[in-house]
Every structure is written in C-alpha cells, then in structure tokens.
Amino acid sequence: MATYVVLSTFTGQGIRTVRDTTSRADGVRELARKMGIETKSIYWTIGSYDIVATFEAPNDEAMTALSLALSSQGNIRTQTMRAFSKDELSSILGKLGQ
Image (cartoon, rainbow, N blue to C red; front, side, top):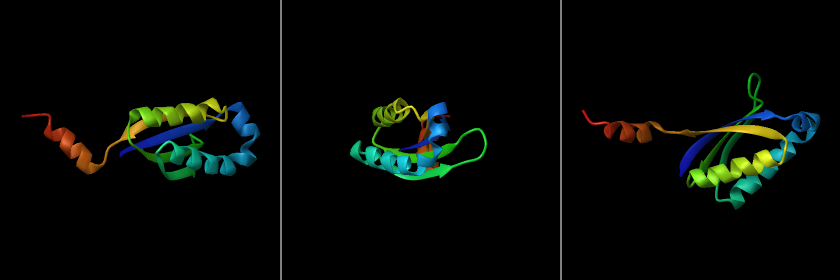
C-alpha cells in the first residue's frame, strides 16, 4: 500500500457548514474504506490548509478517485501528494546508479 498526504482547504460551502466537518470526516473514512483505502489520520490545522489527512491506498488511481469524490462534494479542495517511507526512498535511491 502506498502512503498519501492530502492537504485540504475549505470552499465557501465548506466553511459555511463547518459545524458538520467532523461528521463529514466520518463519511470520508467510510468512503475510503469502501474504495479499499485506509484512513490513517485526519487533522484540522491552522495556516494555509484547513485539514491534513493521511491515507494508505493500493495505487495512484484509487487515491485519485477518492480525492475526486471528496472534492466533488463541494466542501473542500484537495492537493494530494505521494509520500515515501525511509525504506521506500532508500530503494529508489539504490536505482540511481553510481
């Protein structure tokens, strides 16, 4: 499973209904589970992003589908990044050659 970090900002709709954000997070976890994706964490943050979440998904396509499904609900805009563990990056670096 690949790890993904999703940075989200509230849309106008999302901030108007911000009182529902924690219940929407429960819906995110359920939708992700149905798509074969594990929600590792969801945090509400201060700064440039309103929510930071981490997921483990089987591939980029599954994670893209989840990101599009979440964005299409109209409450957030997402930026999704693939994250690599130390071991994964070591393997990648080993392919660089000398």
